[in-house]
Each structure stands twice: as C-alpha cells, then as structure tokens.
Amino acid sequence: MSYGAASWSFTSEDQSAIHQVLQRFLTDSQSKCAMVVDRSGQLVTTVGDQPRFDAQAFASLTAADFSANDQLARLIGETDFNTLFHQGERESMLLADVARRVILVVLFDNKTTLGLVKLKLKGTVEQLAQHFATIGTRPARPEPERRPLLGNVDEEIDKLFQ
Amino acid sequence: MSMINYASREINCKLVYYGPGLGGKTTNLEHVYKKVAPSTRGKLISLATETERTLFFDFLPVDLGTIRGFKTRFHLYTVPGQVYYNASRKLILKGVDGIVFVADSQVDRMEANAESMQNLYDNMAEYGYDLTKMPFVVQYNKRDLPNAAPIAELQAALNPGWEVTDTTRQRVTPDPYHAGENLVEQAPTGEWIERSTYFEAVAINGDGVFDTLRAVSKLVLKALS
Image (cartoon, chains in turn green, cyan):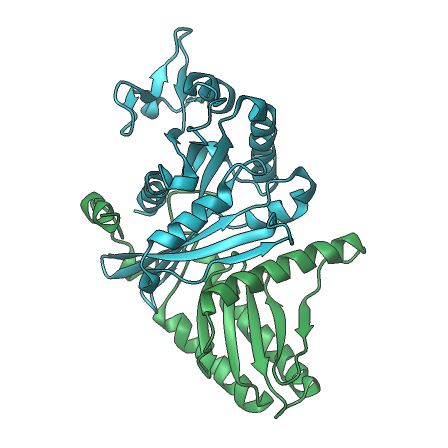
C-alpha cells in the first residue's frame, strides 16, 4: 500500500451510475433508503429517503459491525458473512458486502418483506461490484483532476486550525 | 484509506489514537468534542463497557473546513488500550490515514507504553502498512504528574527513530515544533535517522490536544497533496 495519495476517489459519473442502480433497487424492493459505506467507515453516497439520524456515525458503526462479524465468521471457520440482517420492530436493515470494498446498507420498514429485499439485493450487489471493481483499479485521481489537489496550500491548511 | 469524493466535494480521512489502556486516548477525543463548534463536529460515539473503558472504539467526525472547494472531514477513532481487546483494536486500523500514539508519561507505565507501541507496529504490519511511511505523531500525556518520566527517556524508549535509506531524504530536517531538535539527522555512528514528531500533553486539561491533532492532520493533508 502506498501513502501520499488518496486510496480511491468517487466521481460524479460514479455517483450517477450507482444512483441509477440503487434507485431501481429501492423501487423494486420497496425499501426506503440505500447507503454505500466504505470499509473504513466513510459514507460514500445515499439514495432514497435522506436519513434523519447522524449518517457519519451510522457509517462508522456499520463498518465496525461488518468488520467484527467478519472476524466472528473466521472464528467459526467461514471466510466472511457477506450479508447481515438486523431486525427492528418497525425498521430493519440489511447489510451486504460489495466486492470486499464497500458495504451496501438497506433500510426498510414493514411495507416490504425481508424476502423481497433479499431477492432484489443479489442482482444489485453484482452490478455494484462491477462498478466498484472498476473504481478500484483506476488511479485515485481521475484524469481531469490530476493537477495537484492540495499542492501549495500550506497556508490554507494552517488556516483550518486558527 | 482516504477517499476523495468528487461528487460531494469532500475529502475524508481516518485518524486513529492508539496507546496503552488509561493513557488518555478517549480524553483527547472528549476535549476535541467539547471545544469544537457543534456545527463542525458530529456525535461522539463511545462503545464502552459499563465502567467506561473503551470496548471497541470511540468515534468523532470533525469538519476542519474547506480547501480548494473540498470539505475536509476527519474521522477520529480511539482503540481499546487493554491488551485483551487486540482483535477489535486491529479492526479499527483498517484504512487508517494517520496515527497518534498517546503514551502515558508515568514511569511505571513505560512497559505498557512499549508493549502497545510494539503491538501497533505488529498490527499495522499485518495489514501491510508501514508505520514509518505514514503520518504518525507521538503524544506524551500526563506531563503534570509527579512521576512523569523525562521526555528524553520517553523518546529513547518509544520514538528512537528508524534508519533512512533513501538518499534523497538524508538531509537534516528540523522539527518545526521543537527548536533545536531534528526529525531527520545523522547519528554519530553515521547512519541517518528519522523520528516522529512528538507533543507533551495534559489531555484532561486540554493541553497539547489540539497541537497534536493539528500536526497529524497537516501531515495527512500534505500526504494527499
């Protein structure tokens, strides 16, 4: 792993493509909201009803939840658990691994069923996996953005802390 | 694993506070939480035991401001310091962009400090990360206590430096935070040595907390530039 550059980037084109896939999934599965969270706990994007809770905290806990469950899986001889389900009285959530790179979090209520959400999830995860595999293989900064992103900005960095 | 989100114009970076149990990692985050304007920080999430010992992690997102039109958001994490929780401690290091090692300055905590530092190197190595090549700052906390060890002793034990083999980097580099001290210098035996920068702190009063955060954040942002 190299340092000194962002590990990966997410462009407006990525966002449009992923939103299209997730929008269709939300309609088909009658779910409320889909969030994409990277494995280090950073929220990448949200589609559907905008969450009324602290999305940053939610994303960090999601990644921790997934990582902890990965380790639990290994302890019982599995390589991982690729989906996790948390059931509430009114709201539930389903989490799915996407290409070992990001986590898809789906929030849904009693208007749909776990079966329907899971049924529609499989194809969606496959489509997302293709997108994220492409994102993962390209340079962290796409061509139009290759100029030094934060170059010569010592002063601006200093100002952040005043 | 820093992420540049061009769609939302955000740069997200992950900082982890590491160190022995009861060294002051959570106290650092609590001070940042208290002092930063509520509009620029999120909730402080603590996954702790009933006795307030960190079980999994503490988490605090902080927006530092905007650079070149990108909102810079730092995600601050602590790890559980107790040896028992190594499995969960290791998970938090995944995707880390910068590390603060919070050492307990008390003489009788030297062994715990050294053990935790070794554990940090080991856990980083398991992910394939090289601590000597990433933003890394050491904080000597609890400087107000009467049994605090001298800084020179702490530096010798916890931050002795590593050899610089890259000839382009073999030049004296002053420590911007300590006049008369160098981050890179030639040892009397001839080899070039690099050390991490360090800060003295009394985190419970807030002393040194923001100096440490500022330094590691700058290193992370400069690594991105």
